[in-house]
Length: 325
Image 1 (cartoon, rainbow, N blue to C red):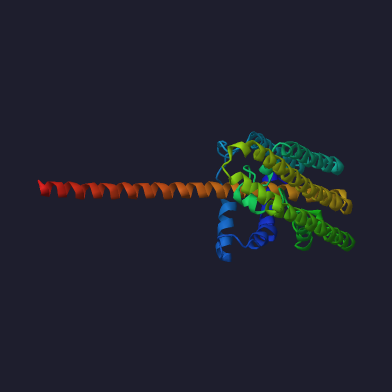
Image 2 (cartoon, one colour):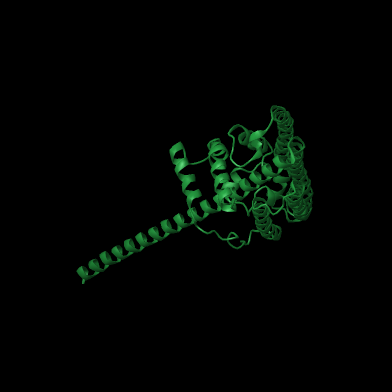
């Protein structure tokens, strides 16, 4: 089957069984009406707008790490789509080779991520390379492991077309469910560690440093800055540790699911998993492009209205001056 045809089938499946339920679960979305949400996402999916490869040039507040990783992430996603196309076109008939290729690609991503995080871990908690939509679905700098189990279950119960996961046995389903329960527990541990780290910013030591920093004592400035630097380094080390813990849970999730699935099922799971990543990226870019266009139109309209108001005021002033003369 042609790549674009399968892409269309999988996109429709992701849209109806995965993306909409996840989107509806987000309480902070501005769109409240279910029908409006469906209409909005349908518009995004049916749009043929060609999106730029990268977001606008980095601002002065963007770090070098962010710039480099943004370029790497775009390149990594582009290569992931190439792997997906080759998979769908049957360029790799050996299932084990396909799984090895795709898992290596994912491992390379985490290797690059961890290397970059050593220099700027905060960039991964508020990534400039992610659209607001992608950020809404981010859990501790990446995808939430539990969503992988939701993906497997959806593919099985909805009898998704063109995927062997529809034939998942009851024994396999039971094993996946048991693994999901264990992973859920590990997710909670990561969230607890992150919460403890976030609360640490308000402990007595940090409050004391904040008070000292607010005082305008020139003689103490250097010493206080050194103390703040040491404290912040401790917090950044903790953030990096939590990020890696979350990534280990993600990798453990993939390995655990692979251990349950057959070679063909692993390939189909990776294909849909890759499709989901790629489509959310495209939908996010589409929404960002639409928002930019709307803002530009609004600003242009406001500017025109202001100019008209200024012209009217000037005309009134001129009339008054003529009357005085």
